[in-house]
Length: 191
Image 1 (cartoon, rainbow, N blue to C red):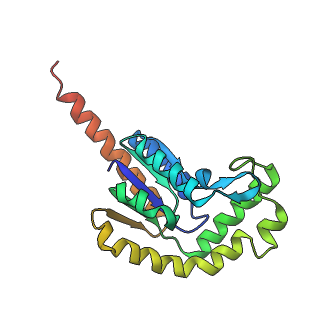
Image 2: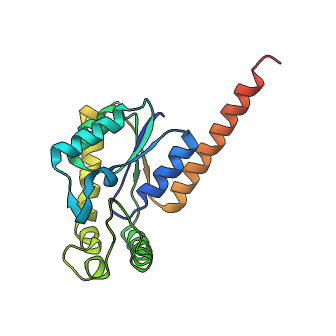
Image 3: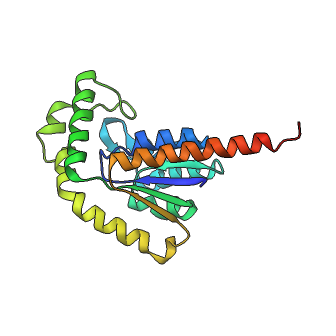
């Protein structure tokens, strides 16, 4: 597991999970949202976005990428060996979204390229992330299942984690495996 993509609906916790996974594996973390969003919440030109993503995945032999932009899926998934799908229940996602958005609005945290979440667009707009999550959750699940079954991605090991508890357990198992591997390697060295 050297090139991992973490996918899931908006606000499921992809970035937090991917950062932790990258730290466990000792590889760089690439956040697709940071490559996609320009100042003023403007989307990067599609070709510019593809070029940025291509450069990021070609820059190193191992990485953890988080994000599920279908327009760059051939680039990212084509190079990946593993896809970790955080497929949590909608109520869990909405609770996480509420906590995250409220914290960002109150703190005025800069997210990407000077962008900040604002109360009105976060909660009271057709452009809100809540609306997006509510209207796309079911369809995204169906499309992800189809993408993972696609012949062009049969080289990928798929890991589907359906709850935060299962995701945490998977990461902890990985920590244990990495520790055991390091210990075995250290004990096999000539003394």
